[in-house]
Length: 294
Image 1 (tube, helix red, strand yellow):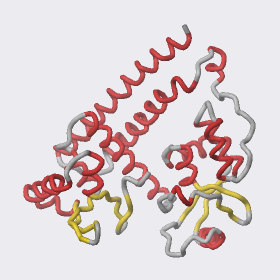
Image 2 (image 1 turned 30 degrees about the vertical axis):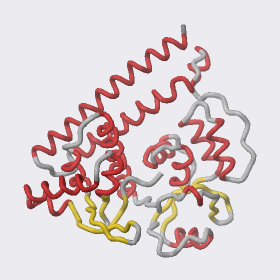
Image 3 (image 1 turned 180 degrees about the horizontal axis):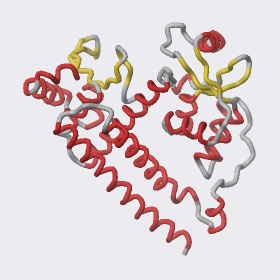
Image 4 (image 1 turned 180 degrees about the vertical axis):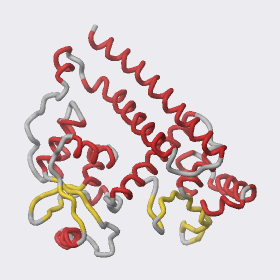
């Protein structure tokens, strides 16, 4: 899946064209919305950068915008689908900001080139590649690595250069710091992040060009005792985890940026909506669990 946000000139930005595609709007209408914002507030110009993209050999106008520019634009988008995309973009901004803060920036993962890398001859996987396989964000994976004390290696400077040479990665790549870990850590992470790990272990095995490891039992003992099938509650748990992660990021960023009064009100509105989503997800999960244990 294409990354929702990208790094350009040391800023995290998103394009008006991508926003139009994801929110189901005509790009010309999104451009008009941006023009209205710029006409109404001169100070908003620092949030938007006019540029072009190519389509069938022709150049077309678009805007790149930072988090604040996106927030101003997205205020006018309503509906359930719009809210879902707002949350996805907020999570993408939060994840990239945290990644930049930690210094673990990787190039976007090309799923067609998802193959085993090595460092000093040892097969390893990066957080970016692992995130693509398990469909979790990189910040969450880094947290689990640190929280559980799992072994990993932070590559810097000459080590990154050696890694690039060993894996034929272009030297102009933006990677400056990199976290890698071995196959053993990858399997342990799947046990921690998932209960039914067989499908994920199969993908990990493919990455490392090995046969899948033996079936791993659920790491949540209480589920084994009461016989809850993880697949039946997986989507509810993942939805709650996503919303809780979003809530944590939104609250954290509440005091990190200066905003207008309207932007602060919009931020709080999103926090309230995320809280309602968590409450609803909890009720849905309870119903499914009660059904499973009857």
